[in-house]
Length: 76
Image (cartoon, one colour):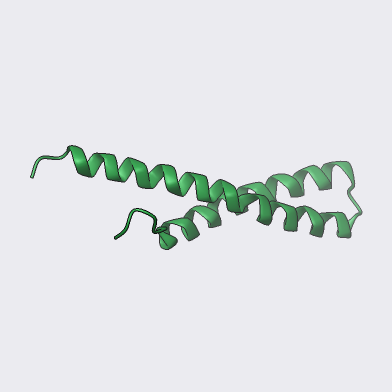
């Protein structure tokens, strides 16, 4: 595996978790401030899905670095 490759299964798992949390957070904010607004709720869900992409990317890179550093330190 080359140094630049992305771990797509890990990214998709992290994205699933972060998007659920971020979209849920935005939904709570919208429902608490504007209880009868469906269009704002849809916008909050879309924005949460988009914002979750870079968060998942950064977390995936950090987890991958942790895995590489632990593999390098184990004796063979």
